[in-house]
Image (cartoon, rainbow, N blue to C red; front, side, top):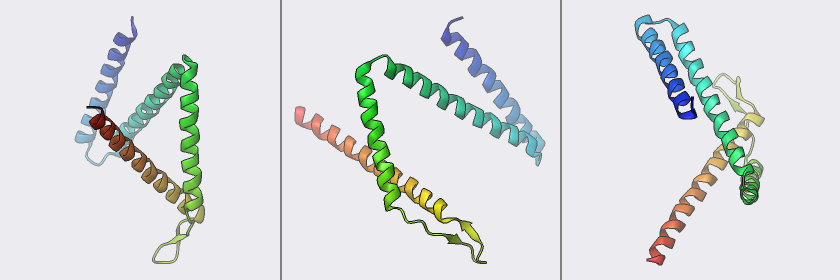
Length: 140
């Protein structure tokens, strides 16, 4: 059996399992066990997809030495963005109305870092799209 047939069968099986959980949720009403099973199926599928994507990417990069250099540069650039974002973030404890701690200083700093990295990546993506459009317009 080739890979495409195996993937087709796996997709069909996962679809039937998902459909069964969905029917259980609709018929079950307030039964949270069906919802829990559906959430676990979703988590398993996300981790499986991420794992497969990482393995295939690493296999593709390892097949060509020139790609290793490009991937290394991209990784260093991403780590630099994370480092700069972490340095710019201020950790501030978040308290509820009653004075209870909701988010610690370090948690607040990590959230700030994640948001700053997200914003930086949006700026980089928009810049790349504009540069690509300008380049295509100038080449015509």
